[in-house]
Length: 310
Image 1: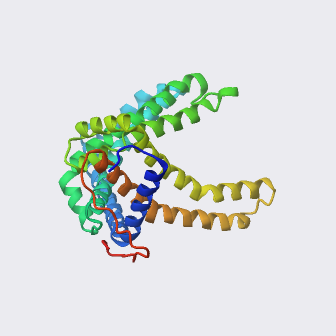
Image 2: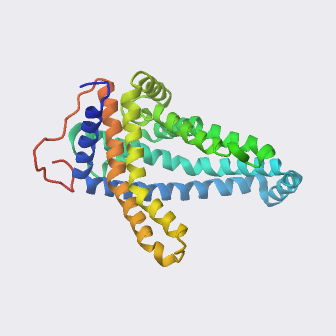
Image 3: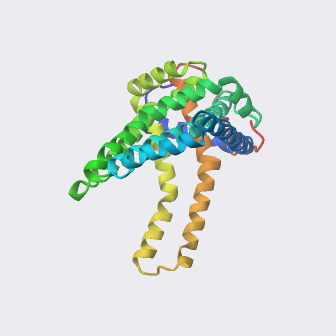
């Protein structure tokens, strides 16, 4: 298959991915429900494990002393921001670990669909057990590369601009952050597919960066296409809500239709667009790595199967 990109190739990728996603709605939905359940349980287990350890090592008196020693720092804006940032990272990272594994498990299901056109909800649990630590490592690498620089930049700006630039250049930070996230996440978008393929997190990151650089057009056309699809889904909500408020209607009741539409767009994004995105990235990875994939059937009126496969 072609490793380059063009509009027709992109359309073929999207068509194949959405067709496979529609053909596997039920197993993917059940798999995501399983992912949510396991993620909640893992977060609860980590909280139960971490909190007693902290209390055991510090004790109530030690925790009180630590708070007392940090109190002077809280009186300055930069000191308070640094403490909030540090505590936030300590709290966030353990909670993100189950999320990293969950995303990896969904990519595992996407790989099964890309290879054989079908999967089952139970498969998500097998990916949890088989690739748990690899998914954690891959997620941490992606987080550190894409998110951590922005968090550190915000922290550095606290003493200068209170967290963000002001004046005529106030747009620089949000626009720059969006560009950085888009580029970094796009370059790292092949990491999870490579981990599913059997590579270590570090090797998978190298492969993703190499593919993103060598086949920039193919990788980013797919990645940006899905960002555009989600954005288009929510455009009516933002435009409708903005115009409603600007015209002075203002009552909450006038926003109900747009809120209902946003709920529907979210449902479509989770149920169809997300599976198609995961399947598409797996397909692109397999094509770029030279692996054979089974194209979806090209019958004119395909039957949609809710149980996986065709």
